[in-house]
Image (cartoon, rainbow, N blue to C red):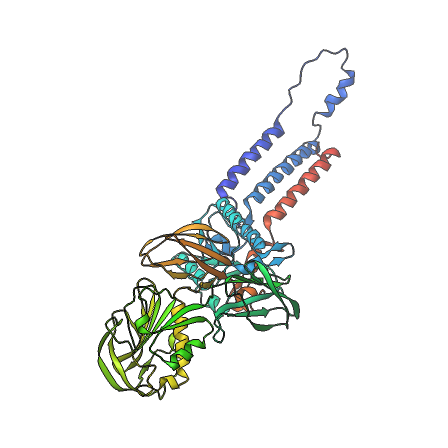
Length: 617
């Protein structure tokens, strides 16, 4: 037998003290006061009853004393919390992982799974032996160590009460690695996971120390948003494609409404029907070019509310003001005019104003001096103000290297394009070479320090004798991609990340600090090396104040693992049930101190009855 609440020395000290007090009270004699009376006849019989007349009467008093001492023994033993398990005899080092991921906010009756997990964690801490060490870790995307190894059970109980549920997926592999590292070199190490069982079987199996699982909750039907993204349309540049993926993890078909909000206003309601255990994907269009906050919401009451909404931020999608500087190019004019996302103006090179205020300027077979802030595209640049150094011409070019993963060359095919001559250009340091003919660059993209973008194409877009590209389908696609790539520099898309993932945002300054406001926090963070790293832990929009300018970051849960509220199958192969281990410490699933307390109360009841029946007095 082993004691959890007290050591054996503490037990004997307390029992000896209380037992001695009981014995002293038993032998304590009442001091009678002397009183003068007229006759002792009435009191003689009472005095005779108080004197022990036989051995049996003396044994009655001894029985009363033994009952009192037995009551004290049982009470102190219950306080010591004895345990019969042989496993508890050695000192243990226990890492307690309390699952606080998004799925733990699912409702089990009128309580969340996280409430049940905190209660179970408090019970486990309370059952530890006095010699056991425990470490408390919150299992989510961050896996924060709440308390290092300690024997202070009161502090652990307090810290458990302060825990709050999170809105991120759980990084189980990282948490198990942390636990195994903490237990390295420590005898009798154990990893106890308090979770709903929505865990990766492969990650559990990879743990060197086999975890013990205290499972919370049961399988619950749930419908959730598992993917949400926004992109500009290819066919309609002023509109967006919104991809929405809805998953039904339940056993029954569900019908509900999808509500779409733009800048807080309800703009559409779509009926949704989804079959059990299926995934439904929808694409929605026709959004305002003014942009703003887009929110979609599933109007359904299910097991988890966190995954019933998702956010995106649509950038302003106004028409670009584009100026074409050309002596006349029907191919280029047609390709530009066909793009509905731009407002096109055309001037001759001799009429060009070097301070022209446009979003984008396209130079065709010319490169006049320019001092404005527009993005620039050059086709076959010539003149004194060329953006690159020109070193003659190259003949009979054939495209040999093409960066087709770049947005400029998306869907563009240069196969069999005949380029009889092109200018030989020398790129600057930092230029991106998108197309080459051998060692000769044909297309160069450049990001200027002031944020402007410059694109240089070394071939002619007007003379089909020099290049037949204007006759190919690739030409209007190339022009359309160039417009979108140049236009995206002025109105950057708002990045979107999954809650719990780290976003890396490029900033202009090398180092400094930024103020971040979000749905769950307001904090100041430091950044250096021109990058701001931040991990959102809630769904919603985060505003970042940076050097007087404001930027936004969108975060969503969108996790099939968290939306699936059914525990993983066959976890028994990779974990042990903590409940089975705990029951070894008591009888019939209850600890021994419960039965000791009940026995003590029964003895008190027997003593009370014996006293009033005059059996022990």
